[in-house]
Length: 360
Image (tube, rainbow, N blue to C red):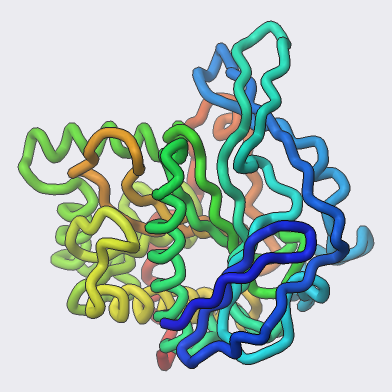
């Protein structure tokens, strides 16, 4: 992998990545040269026991598509016309111009509950220069490069000693609230371990202490042995509809061993993880012959805190559709109580995905 570091006229950093050598004369553009001055902050939620970020400057961020879009129509391509340089490279990472958290944030308002600066990192990861492409449609070698990019960002962001958790994710489709359609994801790096992965890690730690093996490692082995919910499997990676799926067509993708992060994967595991992920995403798009909207999040080991031998890198993919034309909305029991009600059996949805033939 080749990497080139640049600085935008507004002061934000940018990294270009490629399987080939990157021309050194490339220059990073930005919408204008005005320095980005974001100073978001966090407020403590006393009833939920968690931090909430406040970043009102995000109300001025770029928004596409226009208000009259049809949420059930295929996503239309957009791009980052003033963020990406022209030239030979495969992927780009740069600081979000409208971050929910920002390095060096100082705001700590006196609001009656504990507050603190939202001194984290928000990056945009542009998967390809082709605005009409998708993660599922990228060549396998390109997807392997993105695995390397996520590993590089994990290692580099970890050097910021205030950061404790690094989470790559992708929102795909207008149904998921996407504002720019050029194929891209984001990386949020938090100055604390967020509540969802924190709870997962707590349960994984209990399982490891009781059984001497990782929870997800055992789940993957059981799914592969049973086969009924497996969507894709390789020598070192697996994807399956979990027995406890909360969403229709929910799929988990992971290395079969308990690798804690992207950076901990060896070359074989990176190739297998890329192939397994691509297989799942291709099946999604082929299921109803349309771009499949989803939220995909990667959970991995925290950094700059205690040791987490229980951590196991994995993606959780939450589709936005129950069926063609039917969006998946969170209901009162899910938002108000935190108990999900799934009207689709995981076995049924796994069978639908298994029946979709794709050529990776």
